[in-house]
Figure 1 (cartoon, one colour):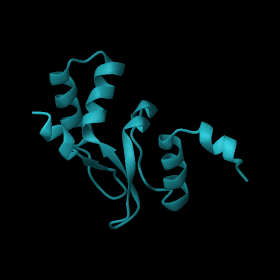
Figure 2 (cartoon, rainbow, N blue to C red; figure 1 turned 45 degrees about the vertical axis):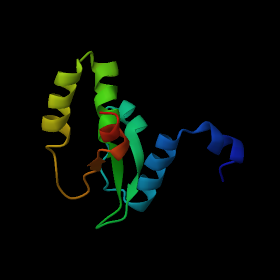
Figure 3 (cartoon, rainbow, N blue to C red; figure 1 turned 180 degrees about the vertical axis):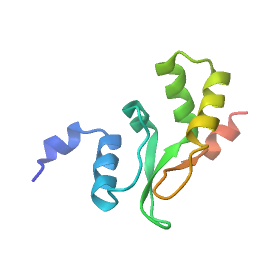
Length: 101
């Protein structure tokens, strides 16, 4: 059994990753694992899958892959959002980013 201290030392992304592995071992996760920071929850729709924040994915591509925003958006739209199917994650764009204008 995991102690409270061990739980506190894990990031939310690590906890979501462990949870999804237990609930739906077939659920796909983005690779490389720095995308774990963009996990904002899970969906219980058809099957349990991870939910990623689209804007965080873009930020992580800019930070980790030496891309500018235009290239990161193009890469994400084609290579990440373009992959769909059973057990694939869900990607959302949160309203707060629309409000920033």
